[in-house]
Image (cartoon, rainbow, N blue to C red; front, top):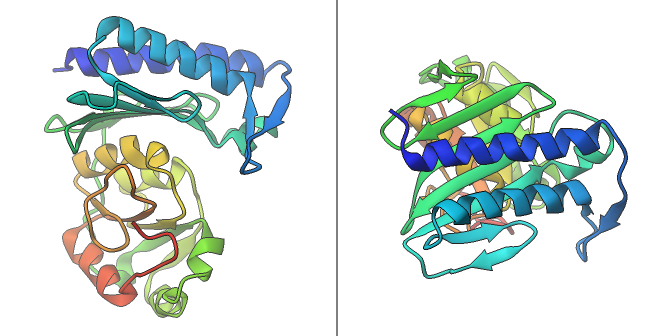
Length: 261
């Protein structure tokens, strides 16, 4: 049974979808942030629509958005929002972008919605209630051995800058196959039982908070690359379909990367 929180998150995602697809199929100007990443009016309008809807329902909650920053940061509940994760894909009219909406109670992530409107996938999960993709239940594969596993890497440039790059190179020959799906997609695939390991560095918690809940509610294990629970400062991900796989990869990596949390 969906909570009022999840109902609101799904409504916010669908509201943002209308705005995003309007611009995706139309025209818009592109600006560059100080870090040279792109931002568009679609990012700004979608986040503002999400923020307005959520805070109208839950005015006592906090809000942490990619474009608008933090509101009420000491609240018990905080919403974590990236209106368009994958703006570089969005501006090139490539469907690998998504809206990420997560809810944190204290230090625990309890809800996640990942909507990829141009790709046609809406995933969501709530702590203790399972995970779903396009309203169908999600379950990881549960494989326990590296030789069974498909591995997907994200942000390879920063992984390569880490001293653990050589350790990662030792893992790669042991797995069944390696890919680099990136963004929302490799987490959706992991939660769906279609791959077994995701390794990613140089991420923002707003990009992965919702996805972490979805993967874990589908039966997977997800931490940062040091094996720590995600928090607002986390910048890396190790996700696996089983505790056994997660532990094997963690032992290989001994990660102390330049972007580790």
